[in-house]
Length: 266
Image (cartoon, rainbow, N blue to C red; front, side, top):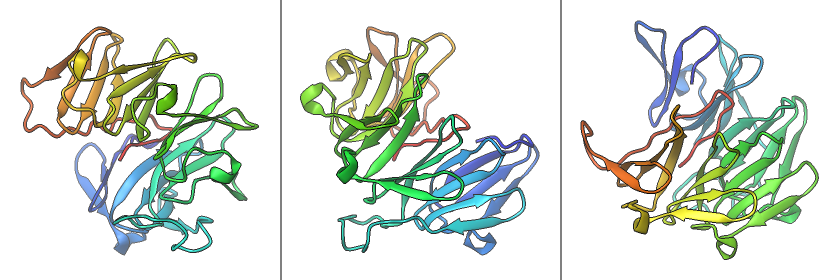
């Protein structure tokens, strides 16, 4: 993520790193970060940086970090989290109205309008309360990738899509919108799924994708889709997925490339 001064920020398991073009500066809990394990990041329209961590959400105003208490589930025992913190923030996204959306680890998605926090859960129609990824499309619809399918919010209500509709997997880890307005979804075990607004099409093993755990997606300037999986990086030209091995070390790939508006994948 790039800030307004041109510095690049990196979210890691050991804090946040800022590179000013010459050297790195490290920020940890000692500097006010809510937790050293940072899962997501975003820059809002005011230039403020937001970080989702294992200990909640915090922001950096250019000088200092400050933490925010999100309205999570009534009790941390209200939902199962496995080995992950119930305060973990998987994803952050700013919408065109300036609202910030936070995808949580069992408390649904939380909207912050600058003053008030509002929580949306399965009670309001969200597919699942574990929200891994968030995207706003060109029409202003908000999409939420969850542990139980894909949800679209049109400003009034949620519509949910699952594997019964053609989604590759009920775990939606990453999302992008391509130049044609299609949504591409990185799923947990089901490959990369394209949604054109009407139907789903999945790129899987039969198309050359050797690993179905898709953690990141990127469309390049030529319109080719890059797919980052647990088994390496693939390039999809619209017909076949090709495993990229030249100059690549190791098989595990997490191409966490994001826009300034935010969003991430596990």
